[in-house]
Image (cartoon, rainbow, N blue to C red):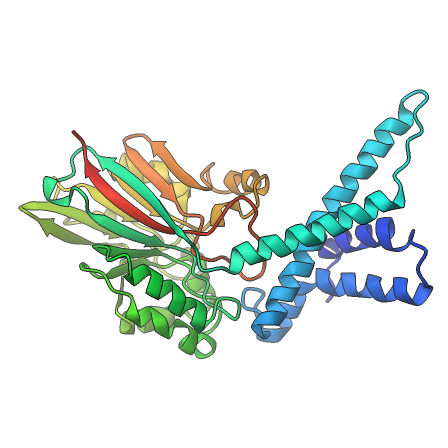
Length: 372
């Protein structure tokens, strides 16, 4: 059951830092076993709940696992870079530079400190980010209309009831016109998360709270979760739309299901169905958990797409890899044809890799503006 690939960073750190050290053999063995145990965090998560997506340990243990796992993920490439530099210097004439053991210690300690900072950034209640979006054909009645965009709440043992209460309190204090949630509400079964999601019942906005499912909802009894969210007052736009009206003008807010729906036997995302019957003259704001289909939305005349899913790439540098799996979209605003795509860094993120460096979480208040 032990997975080899996640253990490779632990083995590399052990080989380059632990075993060259002048420590007693028992200490070397003990530290190596601890590193290997930390590297198997996702295995322990699956054993705790039956799913790698929902570690059911106490919150301090989940934080500790993320810190240790993150330290290994950061230390291994740092040590590898040192070894690569030594290798290059070794082949140069008259060099012969070797890595002092103290440099390896320093790299490992830096990784530990960076991982601690990254976990701290990941688990906080996110700050507010202001985004203004100009929509050319926006009715004047919607000029200044405010939308609070939440995404990737991942309510779980890591982001429990108290965290959700703090997010709801901060959201309600903004007094926005509309709250939208672009999926990944939870990690865990309804039985495990019922208490933790209860604060979402308190979300308030003048035009209500609207949402679309994310891929994680399909991992944990999608139907039960959709019914429960509806009971909390959250209206889900699953290949559907609703129409807002102000001063004789209209604004369409549409939503589609997630790309992963088909694999679990649920309706795939269908933008044509979502927009069927919508007022032809009204600009469309689309909620789509994943940003990869933005070009298709732009081709359908959507003016603004709000997405999440990427968590902003979590770590600057790693975000380039995340972008490759999401059609190049990973964080912030992108112009796609005549449409603006905004990809949230996420209100939270998956508790299996809860690290943020240079890609902070956010509560995103979007203010719509009519063009001059």
